[in-house]
Image (cartoon, rainbow, N blue to C red; front, top):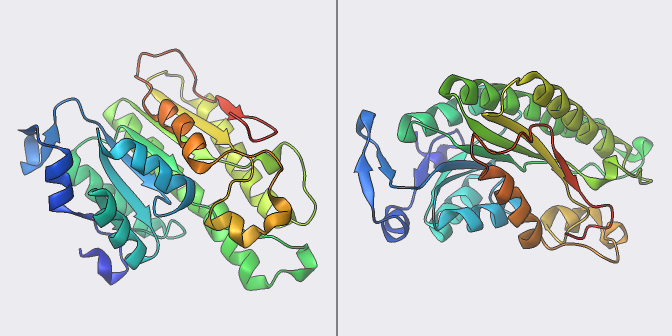
Length: 265
């Protein structure tokens, strides 16, 4: 399914993949796997923290970026030389189709970074019903559909890591963002419960709560929410990648929360 249709469909830059991944071996199903490389999906990988995570991974691993804007997905895939899929996580069907195509292409998914988020700033009485609904669709229903699909797949294959990107606002309430904080609190609670339920170190479910960062989402938020001391997306991305690259037999860290109240790392 071509990604330009607005539906899910894994696409990529053949030139980019050839340039970055020269050593290939055949695998069942007619696909290919690079010796020593792993497969990662970055949801919300076309901007901000997600894009920074994809950039760190793509030189040594297979990367698929998920985004809900076809043009941005195509541009990111071409820039990084990786695969991309158009996927609105508020659609359970698109989430299932997107991951099914990644599995069909590569066989294994070693890690997923859940970076997609919908900003909902402003007092409750100032937000439109449509804006509230969309924030719930992305930050609540979307992360539920995503984790349901990802955790199920990781268990079927017997290993893998998922990192949920929360928000520092959960640790310290900020005025003016009640809906955003409530929806992100749902995601954090869901990850807590899933992590506790794994009963295995081979499937790790973790969350990271960065402070405000100068990203596209931050531009929507406004400068008043940017702390005096903050981390750049590239700095936070190194921590996300560290968690994604944990081996199945590494120390038990499922449920680990990584955060710093001042945004520094």
